[in-house]
Amino acid sequence: MKYNRILVRYGEISTKGRNRKMFTAKLRENILHTLKDFPTISVAASRDRLHIQLGDENAEEIIPRLEKIFGIQSFSPVVKVPQNMEDIMKAGLSLVQKSFSPGKTFKVAARRADKKFELDTNELNYEVGSYILRNMDGLKVDVKNPDIQLNVEVRKEAVYLSSEIYQGSTGMPVGASGKAMLMLSGGIDSPVAGYLTMKRGVEIEAVHFHSPPFTSERAKQKVIDLSKKLSAFSGKVKLHIVPFTKVQQTIHDQVPENYTMTSTRRMMLRIADQIREKNEGLALITGESLGQVASQTLESMQAINDVTNTPVLRPLIAMDKLEIIDIAQKIDTHDISILPYEDCCTIFTPPAPKTRPKKEKVEYYESFVDFEALLTEAVDGTETLTIDGSTGSNAEKTFDGLL
Image 1 (spheres, rainbow, N blue to C red):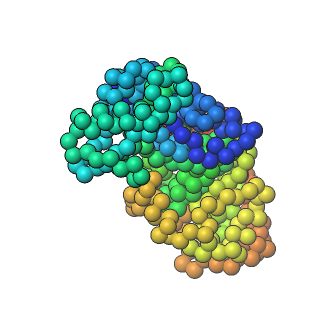
Image 2 (cartoon, rainbow, N blue to C red):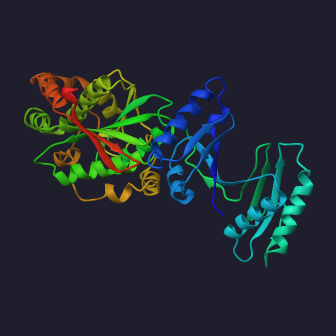
Image 3 (cartoon, rainbow, N blue to C red):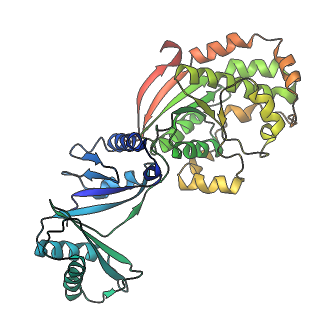
């Protein structure tokens, strides 16, 4: 039995009032982008449901992609048949057979939107259920808690049947809540922070700081691979790769050792903020978890955050490491993050960094260097890749300073 369409159920979108159309339109747009290499599909969004017409496409190839799209509560592959009892019963039998294994129970749940149909709901349940029982061995009915629920929806134009429900990623459609810059290292935390922010409808662009020759091309590729994993949830992710060597060496040479980490984070935040402004972002995102490392104490955050008035989102702030690792494994970034290729956050880490740095002191140490020129040079030399989640390719390569 070939599926004709996929029925998509909204989650949090359904609680929206006057703005619901905007959210459903964004979800439709994201689905179309994710499935753009399936040329015969079409997507129609209504107030309560969204329908993906499959055309000549195979539902089994589309299902894994839909599972990663934020804004979908659940979805079901659907068979469309005429208003004919023989067709309805044969389609129902085929769907139950597809999901059946020994010991499973089932029920038929009919809905009759077309009140002119020849049978009422109870009669439809009985006729379809009886036909399936007669043609299958070992199957039993359980109307309260069945293993398989065959849904039969009678509408004026046709009858729609489904028996499988796939869970979506819930949340809000990416892009419905604006855009922010994710400070993406090669570690475990920042990809998880990006994932959780996208789940709230925020489109992300990633900013990574690359310090050759101290960081290798493998470290750079590691971040590209992490961006590809994140792009599977949003369709695409822009990755800005910042040449950070000069800035980092200058800090190492001019700032006292126990303050170099604080100053480095401050310069990263300033650069990310400039890239945000050029790309019309509304916030910055970090993978900070309170107290996890020296730079993530409240005193450090205050001293670092002082360089910008832009909102800094910290979705991991109250999570412990094991919680973060669990999510990283779920979104398939963990094994990439633990590859042994150091990023610029680790190569110059001092042996005893300040855990309670004073803003006035770090400002004093930085005052002896013209950092403004160095930051401008870094922003102008930034390389930008567009990572397309639907194809896994780098669709665009530019330099921010030339845009």
